[in-house]
Amino acid sequence: MIILSNFLGREYTNFADPNEVRYETQKLSKKLTERFKEKYGSIICYDIHRKIMGKAYDFWDEQQFNEFLKAGGHNDKCPSVCRNAAKWTMEILLEKELLKGEIE
Image (cartoon, rainbow, N blue to C red; front, top):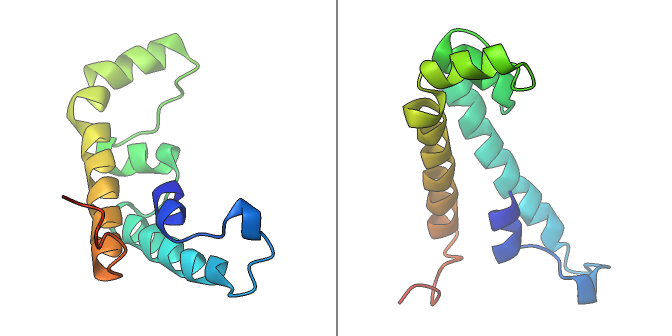
């Protein structure tokens, strides 16, 4: 959402947003959120853990955090979720032609 807002969001110097750019950003953010919900059922890490790993982990609990690591949480599970987030964000930016002139 931060990346989408960076490309299409209201600026601090124009916070009043008379052109209502913020509403377009909200639409794109909703689109990204819906992709997460479609794939993982939620946008909340705790729920995503449950979906892709069979249980949710409490990272403040050392034993559960170690179980998460043993289950491959940081090896392939969470990186795959982050990869999808980046991919979907790029797809939205490309679809809306917001990267035009940005990539050399």
